[in-house]
Image (cartoon, rainbow, N blue to C red; front, side, top):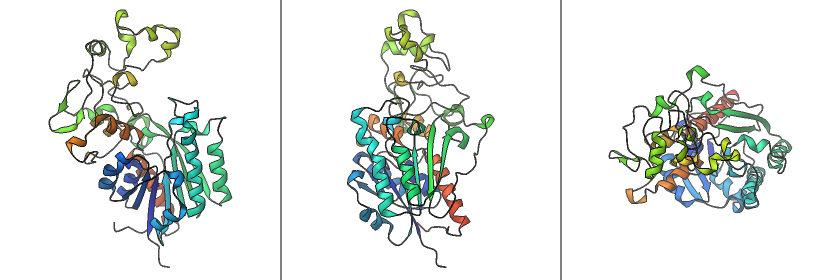
Length: 357
């Protein structure tokens, strides 16, 4: 039997964290689709695949099939998860279009008929009573005779140094498919110290002259005093009374225990977000240095390779844009876990062959 070439198309690709995991595992990633034009450079230069600026709701199955040609098709994607995230779990009207993107993913699966599908998102997607989008998505896959597995992944279990939890769905026309076993136990989790402990120290508002991404946002004089009072692993609760914000003094504010917090050296970092380089946006303070984490540190916690290029020239280095791109990304190591799972599945059916990319 002549084996078909295996090709991957990534929907909602961003700067390519998921694609990069597949690329590292030897898959031929041929295209990524996203409506954020700022992602084009990083996606293409790091993944050697074509970036298509497009609204997924307007993309047709015919267009996707042209990318695949006569290949074994793998369609993957991570639809925007903000409507379901733990930071904004109550779905708002303005997010309905993002919710509906998962229906567009389902529509394209129906039109393209890929052999394998992977969908990654936040676990809360399974919990909402208001929207049945995930159950509808799974029901459509079953109607199309896909075998489905659903996993809630705690990222440290796979060597990712942040406490991110993700929903990973795998679906195959071939037969049962599962995620590979966990690679790390709790006593061997990759920690903050493991991955950023040796980086050169920098001050708030400064950058490492040898690494433009290793830059930290400026702090006001008051916030500089506040972080100096914050213990390793501590938060605003460590501050003198006169420094505590009024909102934290109210009963409703006492639940925000990690805000303005410092990370702990010997634990994984908290979940990276689109605003993770801001001190007041969560537990994003450096464990010892008086600043929030740098862009480089955020990229490291997201497991982007040191060689990953996020900007073309220094003039195109916009910290807030890159922070958003990093926070929105699928960690490449999680992408590798998904890719390895699919590779092992294909090997079971003697369909895997090393790709010459």
